[in-house]
Length: 211
Length: 211
DNA sequence: CTAAAATCAGTAATTATTTCTCGAATGAAG
DNA sequence: CTTCATTCGAGAAATAATTACTGATTTTAG
Image (cartoon, rainbow over all chains, first blue to last red; front, side):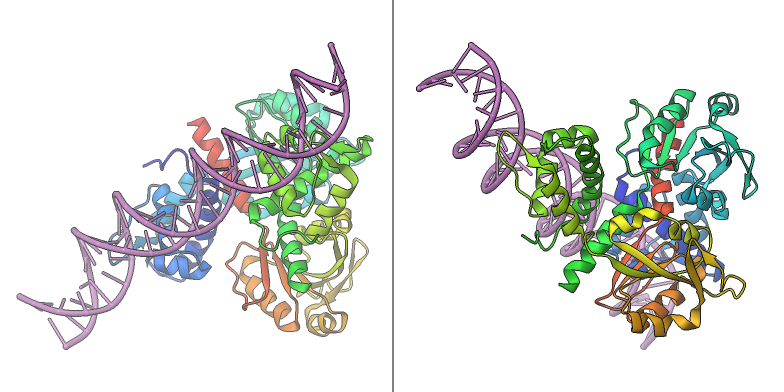
């Protein structure tokens, strides 16, 4: 029902891929889908797809496959995307603004309520309909509004500071975009979303291809 | 000298982390560093760090560790970050703009030369000092300027189209930010930088923690 | 000069992840 | 009704990644 407790990171990262595909399939009117079909879209192994789906608690029927709509629901449920999580964002630079302007987070269960910045010139602005507040208001608002997620889009050298502030205010999870090693207390979730990691894979592949 | 040929994705993704740390260490004036120290910053296993560094072709001396500057150079060389790669970006939305405005790509060997967009209203603008050109100019310019990297920041339903255009123009690698399964011909490199994957890990961890 | 501690480097063991294999179920075709 | 092809599901095997172990090396301390 709830899906397995300890699912691997790799599986977790493939689930959104399946989800996007399933939504497209659903929009096209198909009601059933097989792991074979999903796998072929991504050049994955069908068994891998089946195991991934199994992890969410979904089950299919032989020869037919999975019903698309319940499968979508199960995956979203498993990822926690059916219920919105409120979040605060710290650091209204380019990346911060991009995230603030990203409409689709709603679909992914993420609701960025407000943004914070150190720079007084940025405070007071509205960025994509969201208010930019001074950092010193952060702590009180996190507590009062029971915010669980802090998104960190400040420069690397200010990242730990921003994280510490969010954590001490009571945030349960940090989504960090700064390229700096972050330390957090036991029990707080840290997820790093670092473009440089992805870029590293690309440029390494490219240079070894070119030489 | 050149580092091993087939290095795992996991290793490749840890290297930028080490690099950022090493640059900080270097800025603080330290000339030597041990794997033990690097590992402790990230709570990694020291052996893992040693193997990762080994993959770049670096070598250290017993009891002392690695010299910081040559190590930085080796990692950057291995990642292909010492020589700039020219890139075109397609899709000047929020994410596109964030990438265009990101100064630090220069450090990572990425040089975004120009941006392209379908929308005539966006064409002609300058986004962060870079010109926004109409899509129909893309093909010719890729060829003429020998652009190797295409960055795709269009909506999901236009992603394959944008990729096809870039690939047929001769781009060797695609850095895709759109949440859609992309098909590319053999020999072209595809690297997906999808925030939703990272978010999925976070929200799943958070919901299983909260329930 | 010797002993001790720290670290690299190479190898082995462990663990995690992916892929393969097989039996049962189901619908379609003849 | 029987046969066939497809798929799920469960477990086994294979592969990949991480972690542990051992010996060699080098500095520091006594």
